[in-house]
Length: 432
Ligand SMILES: *[C@@H]1O[C@H](CO)[C@@H](O)[C@H](O)[C@H]1NC(C)=O
Ligand SMILES: *[C@@H]1O[C@H](CO)[C@@H](O)[C@H](O)[C@H]1NC(C)=O
Image (cartoon, rainbow, N blue to C red):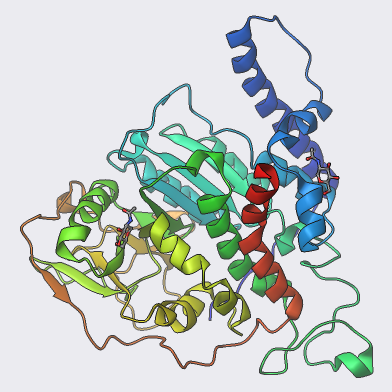
């Protein structure tokens, strides 16, 4: 599986200074809007005010106690508060269109990739009608700068407050008591449960599955901005290039799904086979759900959420393989997604990294990008009169696969289950 580069918080105190500066600035802008509305004149803002203001909507001490969540660092608490800031660019785009599809972009720390994705999004027809939520695994200034530069739609940033990347010396990061590699916990008096292959947890590896699950729970159940949103949410990643027609095609697919494919759970912008650019046929295709540009609604999320135990307890560190082998098979029928015959999103990587791939594959070298975007990729190219072809006997991970491991530690499994509970507890706590 993909190797994951380990980022370092080089200068935590500079980071914190920067963070509080950001908080103060954002808070200032927010308060300015508020004060302009109430006409109460100017004030000086200090960093502490953000705490008073932003803790209004949730009771962290209640949730932490109830769920026994890891003890938070200062940075982790700040991130949790940043997550409640309203979206940027509301002055430029005061209203979201009625049938908008919220886009969630989840990222870690590859700024040169993120630049390419953001650039591609800026050319997407209809993007100004919607809200873009960028979900960060860790806190990285260079990543923030790119997101802050976005002017083409409303943007909200959220940061995983329990990311291993924001805990430098305790769980979910590395703690000094943790067992390493294949150590025996009883003999070494260390902490940890090994996976099925005898290996202890690696924070940088578990962080991806944690982030995905935290993000899903947060965007569906934990944000004011998406509450009452009955439509679909589209999910893309920091190494997905999005074609100009992606948003309009997405809207068409969502509209066609109930009629054309009542059995489809989702729609996809790209084929399940990440190396395929599509068949180019004159038809729609129903196949197993892919991990590039997938969109589904709240009903489907509730089904996924009900399988939290399956998701969190399977000894597999990839979220997508976990979904394919544990969650979807538990729905009791094939889980199809609907897509067009020509891709509107591609997964890209470094040029020449994989053997046997032709120059048709999208790639990026030193910030120089090679993508084929034809004229037909610039306008919606899905036709409502098309029939649907169902793909059968597709290769890939299925029920019965025992997992690649990397997810054996009880603490990770518990944290994962806690993410599934935290917003539901919050709701019962505030309503009672
Ligand atoms: C938050 O929860 C704690 C612990 O349950 C409780 O003592 C406190 O009163 C709550 N605060 C608010 C503002 O509801
Ligand atoms: C959400 O999508 C599912 C699967 O396509 C569909 O059965 C359901 O009716 C949709 N729910 C809403 C509220 O549109």
